[in-house]
Image (cartoon, rainbow, N blue to C red):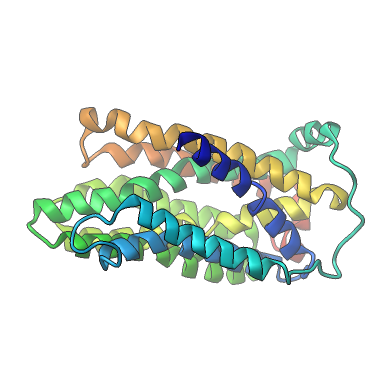
Length: 304
């Protein structure tokens, strides 16, 4: 089973970066919006198991069997594969160069691209740890208050799923107001929510409202880091640049997903999410430095 899950992760790497590469071939002036739509779809798909869980679609009142959940997720993946057969590259598609390890070094050496990647890493420090542990945090809060556990699971779906709306809205705003502006604003909101969430642990109603704001903001900026790299990178190596960015980001998520349970006993639910605010703080600093560079004029048709 573990081997198959590793294979699942490896094959997912063949979905996300190429999908972003395909999207950017269809647009130039509204790149942030359409990459935002793509990431919004990813976000909604990530949230669906929590909805199935809360509505007890599989197996009654208790936690549904994990086998049935995997069957359902796999069925959606097969449907997506059939749809993907009809996807074609768009007109904004310069000739692609073969993968070149030398360009990986160049991308890391380019200051503007490096800062965009640092901003993305700050974002990823927070995102997947929040997605992984926030639904359990809500269950613990609802249990402590004597509230319904299925309601907590539906709330978990809403908290993750509302990020799809955040991606689309942030994408539209970023194309007009600037990539760095929207990414910094999103990280400021999500970092603040990470600091405040634990303080509302014994008040599940207020906690749910705060977490909805957190879920909206925590992924709203995700597409803008990818759009920024696609605009800053050599057009022939956009796919390589996006793959490098996402590889580093998802590698970092392993750290924070494992960190939360490791320190939960020491810090408790009221403080454990505060460590996630480190990422947005560093991400804001990176994007501010990027904003000050002349290369930032290449973002979003001149909107920094």
